Image 1 (cartoon, rainbow, N blue to C red):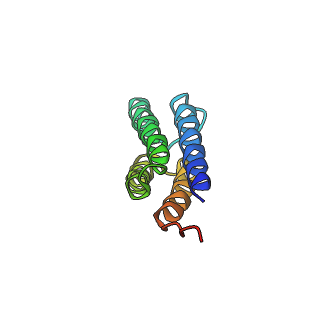
Image 2: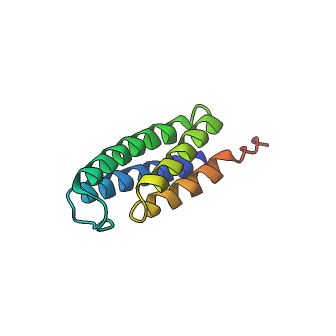
Image 3: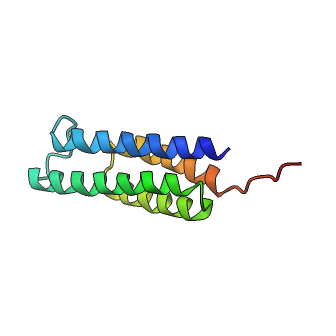
Length: 108
């Protein structure tokens, strides 16, 4: 079951990085009231947060609660700075966090 959590977290991280890059290249439009410099700053913050999210996904194998907490923090960050485009990555992070927080059943 942990393989699914890890795969979802890595997918969300890469999707978030791609969406951050597309926002920085002004392919995905933001609100008209946001300046170009702000979009670049948000893009850098989002790319960094998604890299930390990938690290959190890889931490699930060693410590599932720590990896889950890291990805939950990344979800909060990308929902603040990346709305609406980063919502896809946020939803996948939330699915991975919920699945990673559930303890595994021991083998019988």
